[in-house]
Image (tube, rainbow, N blue to C red; front, side, top):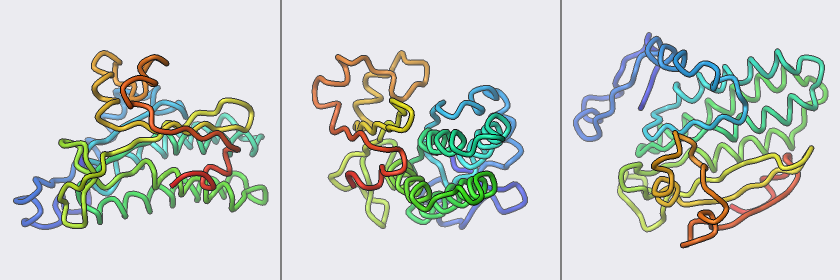
Length: 227
C-alpha cells in the first residue's frame, strides 16, 4: 500500500495513476491501521512487509514507533539500544515497482534511523552501525513486482531475478545471522503462518531450494558479507 503525508497530494501524476494505479494513503489512515496492531509496532523484531510500499510513509511510521519504544526501554544503555535499533530496521520490508519510490523510501528510513540513533547514542554512535543499517535497508527495500515476485528494471518491467528477502536475527549478544530466501518460496510455505514472513520450519527452510545462503557476523559488520 503506497502512502504519503496527508498534507501532500495523494498522487504524483495522473499518468502514474493510469499506468500503475498509484494512489497514496493519507497519514491519518496509516496511523489508524497501525493502531490496530499497536503492540506489534513496539517490538523491535516484529516483522512487517509492505508489498506496495510507495515512498515509505507506512514503513517509516512503524520505524518511528519501534525506535521510540527502544529509546524509552534502553534510555540508560546506548549499547543495547544500538543492537535493538539494528534489529528494528531489519524487521521492515518493502517492495515497489517504481524505482524513485524505492530510493526515497530507503533514504527516509535511514534518515529517521540515523537521527534517532545519533541522538540517543551520541559519542558512542559508530559509523559501522550506520553502514550496517544502510546495508540492511538496501536488502529489505526492493525494486520489484509483488504480483509476479520478480525484480524489475528502471521501466518497471520484470527481469529474470526473483525477489529475495533476508531474515536478520540476533543469535548471541552481538552476532547477527542473515538468511536469504526467495519471496515466492516464503509465501508458498506461509499460507497458515498468521503473517510471519519467515515462519518456516527448519525442514521447510532446507528443502526445495527455499534457503539460498546464510551469513553470521557481528551485527555492525553485516555489510562486509554478501551483496
